[in-house]
Image: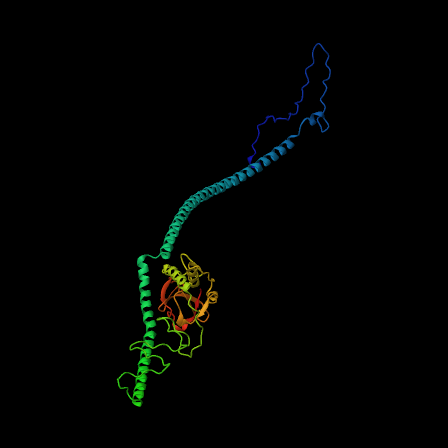
Length: 385
């Protein structure tokens, strides 16, 4: 600390320090007055009043040195503080630059987010518009599917017509065979009768006039030539052409259900039910549907007979027990034909081995053969009214 001290010139007065008084010289004696001895000032010492007026020079020097040391320390601290301040300023500047960059990035991200949100909003609006358009198209497609055009009806009717023709041919085949067998039995009967007449003619003399022998009393008259033979007493009536065969056909008479007596009003109600069923041809099958735009099998038969004034149960199981069971060979138009052992399908009989029904999902109401699933699939026939 002493390296920066500077020397003071002699005689320089330091503030607050009084210099020691110079010794006073005695004045010469005056001629008019006798001389008196001049009093001497008291010696300066530790206990003298002049010594208490201020610190000594050594104390002042020590105090000045101490102040210089403090000033040097303050200068050092100020320099260090300035260095730290410069570093802090530099760091603060760096941080401010970083904050500015981050703020710029954040503003950019905000702009991108805003633009993305606007894009998302536009996409959502476009999606809503597209969804509404698709829904309208689906509604139009459903309407077109539920209401087939004339061309579609014709296209759908073509295979059904072919199936009906095939079913009619199959249904006519048993009738043709039965007619041939009947004609064969008739020819055999004629041969037997002719042989019997020849035997009777050879056994008895021929009448003189050449007239044919008179029939015995009570004997039935001979059938006319070419007329069909009369049925034997107690024989069931001939089945309708194309009717589904009765289970166990060819067995002895008296087995199976017996058809009720014909009801004159049944034909009129059955005609109304069939007219309603035919008007539904081409409508789609939907499980559980009862109309008017779509049907399942039992929903169609229930709606058809409801149009005729007859209320049927909803399910096939209940409909099978809601009427009178008749032999399949004696089925009449309007009767309900049930299928499979578990009675899970039903159609309304139209005659000639055909029926109108709603087959299964993915198909439409149509008219086809009762043998569409094979002859063994027919379970029973029920007359609902």
